[in-house]
Length: 154
Image (cartoon, rainbow, N blue to C red; front, side, top):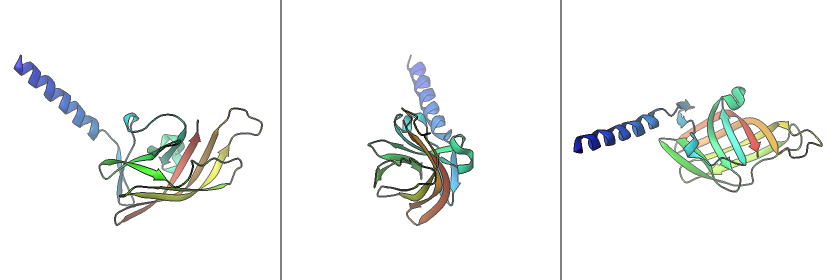
């Protein structure tokens, strides 16, 4: 019985470790950034940031920002909660510029996003804006600048 329990416990631990190892990690300008997984963030109204920009939502999901809450980003082996300096961006016209600033004690993310898709006029119930733009991510002495595609809405 003890052997079965030990083997079962070891199997659970191995699966948990393998789960951590399956996170897609990439170096973005010298900063190791991990793709977010379902348990890392709340699903609902907010913004999803994807890299690289040209892949749009098919790229790596690197920042999740929930309406009324902090954003989350996985870097340097940890999930970081980033506090926003302003509300989630929403655009009513193409080409609108929106400033984004998210930060914690260890990490800051900032940039100017440009709207590339907005809800068509007279489309009731549509609450989506899409953006592209450069983000500067700073973690200690590392400063990385990347282009992202961002979708915000409900």
